[in-house]
Length: 189
Image 1: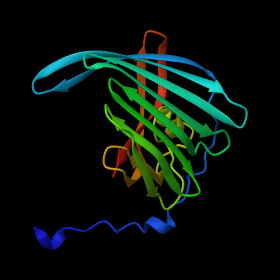
Image 2: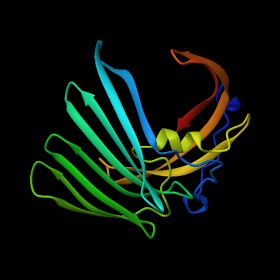
Image 3: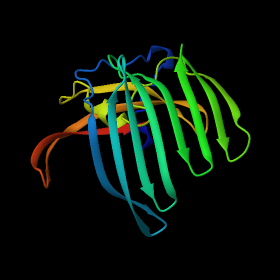
Image 4: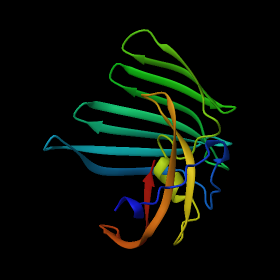
């Protein structure tokens, strides 16, 4: 019944800042196994991630081995706020180099040809963007009822996206290392 539909209140992009983090990242290495499902087919992939201490920043390198070739995403984040400062993405002939400073994204995008300049007003700082994004979400003060709105940058469309992280509950996750209590967090546009 259309009379019972309640529209979500529009978020004012100017009011969106960085969410406050409750923890920081930790230097180290992680590895995951996964799959891409598309068009009724399933393709295996493996992801390796390293977090290195860069002084006032962390440098997070994610390497995904996929059937379409390796993709490497290197994201530099501010150590205190986990805001993205730089991002470098390489896969095949594609090379993207971006700097996030003063509420702007600048750099170049090359898809096998001459690099094209990028200059986009972000309206604020980016959070949980690029390699280390999942770890940044995990550094939030997650609890029942918690939610936060933050900015990401869609590299392909060169546009800002507002995202919301919302705790949807907790669950026990069992992996070879044991059983762990974990928060389930939904990310929506």
